[in-house]
Amino acid sequence: MSKVVTVQLEWKYSPETYLEEPISISFEGGNLEIKHGVAIAIIDPEIYHADSSIREELTRQIDSRLHAVQIMTHKDFELSKPSRTDIREDGKKNHFLEVESCVMTMSAGTVDLVVKDKDGNIVSDTKRERLDKQRRFASLVDKYRHSDATLDQMLKSYQKSVKDPDDELVHLYEIRDSLSERFGSKKNAIQKLGITSAEWDEIGKLANTLPLKQGRHRGKAAGALRNAEIAELEKARKSVAYLIEKYLEYLET
Image 1 (tube, rainbow, N blue to C red):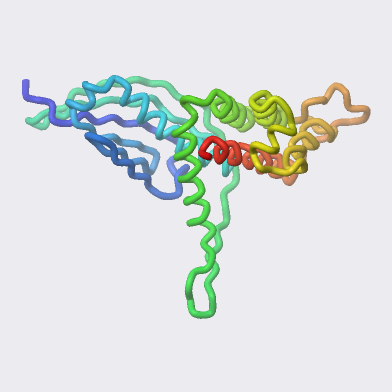
Image 2 (cartoon, rainbow, N blue to C red; image 1 turned 120 degrees about the vertical axis):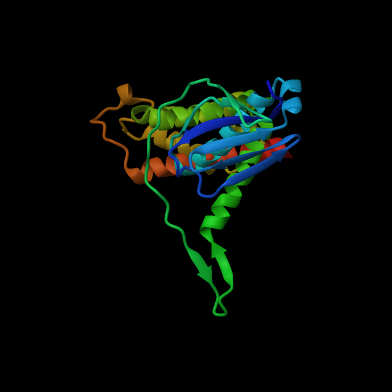
């Protein structure tokens, strides 16, 4: 049997259009390309067999990129475990398969604007700004999630809010709860995160005070409950996304 010259790992994710542009990540002994619903890592076989954590590390990097999109778009995703293919010198391939996935849901898209001055120079490109923010967010998530239990719990809570819309505000409030536990008090949290008291209180007003079916205190409401308006849900999502963003900045500094 001829020598293995390349190990290829392949993940499937959906929706295929989840990422707005391809992502390429180089690492020692290989390269990872993520685009059009497929992530493919080409790895030197010696590096692959010498590092037992490489599959987990690459999966975590892909997951971080997808989570960054989720926090900013409130869309869910499906990511499979990787399949492995050994490619030999004679062109023959040996396939290995591991199957596992999550449930997928969808939400509305985004409208982008490119603003130019009178000379045609771009002064604002909302798509580019959004993608740059996603890249930085994903980089910080990948850097700290594995070692920081608070960040890991907040990301899990946000994902639950996407998958369980009937209890969306309950799960979004859990994100602030995680920060309360991390810092011990509201005063310490807003000081460490560099935010205002109003920014901290926003998700509490929506999840606790209003008589909403998606809220935390449904059984205590005096009158009839109503469904949260889209604008209220968007405000709640942006509120906790901001808290996560500020926590990542705290970890970085």
